[in-house]
Length: 332
Image (cartoon, rainbow, N blue to C red; front, side):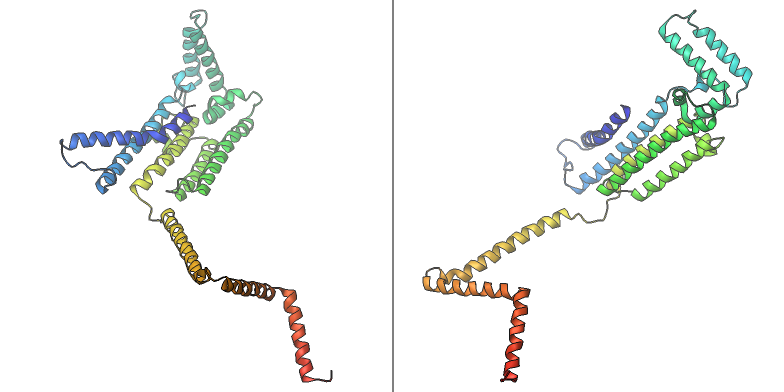
């Protein structure tokens, strides 16, 4: 649901906020009675482009931060453990939380739910295979009941990987065919494939890439993947909107020339009709002339039809050859 709300936000919010900020900017910057830039003027368009770019980039940063903050606490954070915890630390921390949220001491439903999560977190982090899978695919592994080995978990995890990249790649291809979001389309595909390779490396490699460990040190691999996917989608949605505003394309818009061409073709067609009517004007009050013209036009139409008929041309050619032969040999 949040993805749809985010998409709707990108659809109308930047333009709405831009119009409001531009109006506020003019009220604060120009005194009453001053010559305020009007829509259609170059100065107004320049101000609108800059404010729009600022709004889109700010909204881009907000959505990325919102994704980072909306991620639920992982099992490590829940049990207050580091990535290199010991078995003793795992048992000690989980025992404290078990005693704190045990249903005998906390009969409420919330405490019961937390107790179940704590028990699941302990079972997952105490099992090396489950821990490996959890680091890469998150809580989804709890639904994979038949998975027992790392290979089983990787098989189930790849289905989610393929689903995301196949769906996103198909969407990018459709948008490219429809001519939507053309700004930066080459780099969009380059980054898309590079991110797929990076995510595959993160899943298969024992440790996350060093650069991600430095940039997002408090996140597990599956959380880093979630953030990277959201950054990719949000960034290119934002760039597809702000890019054409900051860097207008020099490509020609053919709609206006085609409209002018349509108008000119209509004018030419009307002029041709007028010329034809002017040519037939002398026969308007001459019945005999119209009859002769009609007869000659019928003959012209018939001749034109016969000249284009292959069978007639073949027979005419044969008759002409026989006539020539008779002239050369009268006795034949």
